[in-house]
Length: 194
Ligand SMILES: [Zn+2]
Ligand SMILES: [Zn+2]
Image: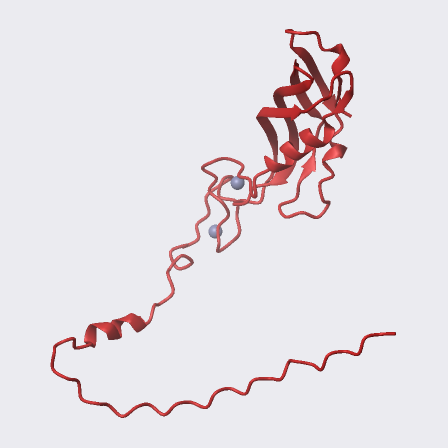
């Protein structure tokens, strides 16, 4: 628990609270994608001041996580850190304030949706699956990246349209297709249970 007893805070003097907290409080789901597992405690450095009866806490917190690179799938450890924590609690003079949930929430919000082992990770070869960061392979990857053949665009027909003032010959209207049968979905209202 990360707690501050506001009766310990002296006027005009920031109350410093540095420490560690078990990363169990993050309650990360066991089967997340990408996998996320804490590999160390949460570290925090907080500074608390009173503004009247209100408590203002600023500071930072971080936790190291194990996950995988989204490009090469290598196991990596990444620090999740929040540098600009700022919490405001109203009317808490001479009370104990629990910051655990607030710190937890800020750390979880700072977790990105994917991670990379390095900004210039080369990824894996789409042909042989080799990790290209470790060694280059000799596959011909040009075929793997060839874009699919694109057919004529339906918008091409717009080019053939004639917008001159000459009235266009009335063309035989296309036979309207039968409207698809609409499945009856509406059920008779259930009789209320007695
Ligand atoms: Zn990578
Ligand atoms: Zn390859």
